[in-house]
Image (cartoon, rainbow, N blue to C red; front, top):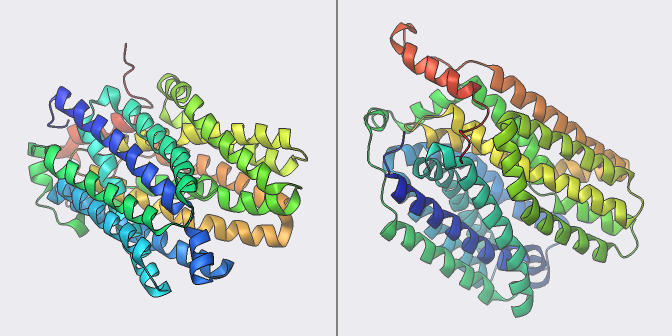
Length: 424
């Protein structure tokens, strides 16, 4: 149970949703053209570009678990404001960098700061929103982020795709959002549960999280999911441009199809999750990923590619909020940041997905690559189902479960609940 009043919680959630959308616009108008700038301004080849872009998210994934634990201990507002401000400084550094070394340093700073921000932001969304509204706010935030990434590249193209100014402006937007969080977002008041939890150090929090087999299965399933959809444009673009005439035009059409499908399907997807529950919705999304990738493998024309993209995207808008709800369901107010942080290890899929896809594409062609992603989708559904069926672990230091009966029963009920209470 969070310590915000319901009205204050709604305001905080709406501010985070709106801010996430604005920041996504800033990222879209600058980071969308990161590879082009590296090629044109610094003369890097495909391998160098891939390594440079990939190292930031990889390091960020390693840092994010501890970041979530720190937000549990120090407070969400402080961690969020500092993280988004450092991300802004990193973006400004990307615009001002005159060497590959400086560019790499700025990219790593921005990536690590973003990895620190994300689990703390998800935890604050859960803190702020009443339980009956959490699915909605997760869904709205995801929609705002996707809308921002759809609008941002258009702004970037209008002002010059490789303009240094775009990165500087994006950094200033991040700094403004960080200042807004620090000045206008209240810190959650410490409940008795939080006060007791704050006496536990960050490393011990992480140990407790990693002892939870449910979370470990969810993190494994999330890694496979992120490998499938996190960087889908990278392997798909290579396949389309190589194997289809007018591949650039077709790929642009698929990107637009993805953006439009996200906007149209987000609300129906939320209603589906409310009706059938988070786990079943996530499994359904994994199946749609599977069918979408099989469709890509079997496509011989534009029409089939577009249909496959729509199927794939509907899977995406189901699994993202459903996955957040599953993590929220096994966490408590005292360890929510730690759990979301530990689960953020799954973002290593952003590194391994394109890497394995490129290897499969080179060795076995598009069919082999899409079959690999189809297997990842099926494996993810299995891991989430296994994790959901497991009981919660004992608390650290508990000699016997008798004194924690109420806590264990509560966790079991939370793990078994597939969806939040429906709103009228």
